[in-house]
Length: 199
Image 1 (cartoon, rainbow, N blue to C red):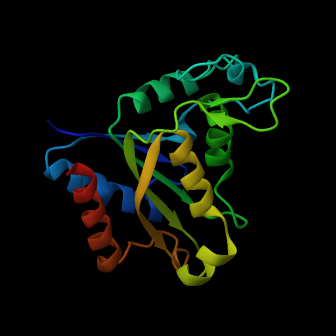
Image 2 (image 1 turned 120 degrees about the horizontal axis):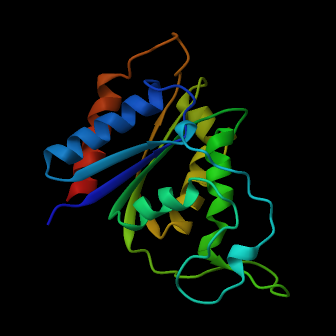
């Protein structure tokens, strides 16, 4: 049975470093028989989380429903059907992009957090899917990975979505040209990650 892989792209520019890497991952997975789908967060109408916590009050394994009337529920519906995820964002000001941060904040619906409880608790701690995390930075990769929190926040998103991270690809020096093609080394690593997700 083929695996269903859903990618969430938090880039502002299509065709950029993160987008190219995710395309390589998905192409390799598709070549192994996987079904793939890619969502650009910039194309979605996503409202900010207002911290009303309505979605966290109902007990149970099923994620809570947000009161916001936007496209998040449809996006999460696609993710619900996935066996594997690819989550990607370039680094902006040391963190994920604002669109990716908006998406991550809305994932609080996967937590149970009734009033009076000190902290949120995962509704379903079991990791039923796997994830690959993709980041990029204008700085060298070794420096950006240590000074920023892109991979940490993408890992948080994966965990909330019930996915165990099984690989990362972080590409540094991504702003040397306006539309820089990723290196063969990055492509090869991306393809290996895609094959792993499809297995």
